Amino acid sequence: MAEDDFYKRLGVSRSSTQDDIKKAYRRLAKEYHPDRNPDASAGEKLKGVNEAYDVLRDPEKRSNYDRYGTADFQGINMDGFGDIFGSIFRGFGGFGGFGQRGRAGPPPGQTLRMTINLTFEEAFFGTEKEIAFRRKIKCDYCKGSGAKPGTQPIRCKTCGGQGQVVRSMGGFMSVAQTCPTCRGQGESIDTPCSDCRGSGQQNERKETKVPIPPGIEDGQGIRIQGGGSAGQRGGPYGDLILMFSVKPHKEFVRRGLHIYMETDIPFSIATLGGQVEVPTMWGNSKIKVKRGTEGGTMFRMKGKGVHSQDNRSGDQLVRVNIKIPRKLNKQQKEYLGKFGNVFD
Image 1: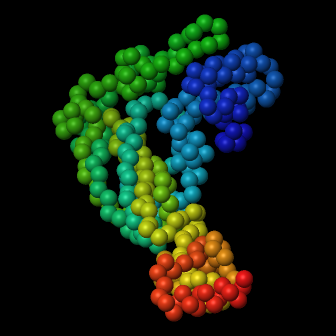
Image 2: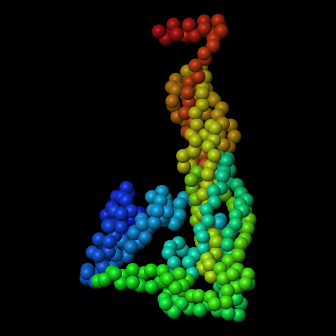
């Protein structure tokens, strides 16, 4: 099933409440459960329902899905951002596929969020920004285990190291819960590390330069997997989410790769035709105005928009307004009077 159909999978609308989503999930989980539905396709349908519910039940994931069409920032139009940031954040804890943890053990560390402010020009042409933030990294002394060097964590006897215990709800229903003994860690530590006191973490102030490719738009973001804080007792690193805030320009408005603006042209040029110089992000350029041009006419300047990293380029569109003089001297009034008499 396509990820862009999560609401349809559950048979709910985008305005549905969390209770509506939960009820729809429970109904479909019963309908497609293998113990009740012998159809060969039921298992695949149940898998799709579980995938949709996992996203829509989580407010943050649902918000990302509604905004970007994905729950984990994949698919955001970042034009090659993955390769750029991959080279910057190597060593943050590793990169991999997005999704849930597929194994028991210590939970991942904290996901960190940062906003990078850009001027219109920086987003248009691209730039490089220095960022600094604090995070938790794995303890050097115990290598993140939380146990004193020379000792080992002990597997939890309650959950057998799984970090979860399964509780039967009656019938075919069962619920997996966090192990009350190890609190989801899957193990316990008798002799904690003296440096980190058993957490497996230490503080770090991270400084790095982030290359910003041309064409970034306001509100775009990227998730750097493994760029956040380390988990306790050897848990995997959380993620780093970078969001971009672009300051508006006084003259230009951006829509995708295109740039829009308005400019005034003299009444005489609108009537007789001629050339008008207008500003662009690439420097001043001229547009050719035909005779009899009316106010509101849109002119397209090819290639004067955004040039993105993947070699796509937009245009600049200029809407012209006819500039009507408010103060006229005696001679100007005389000429305009004669002009009006000719066309009456």
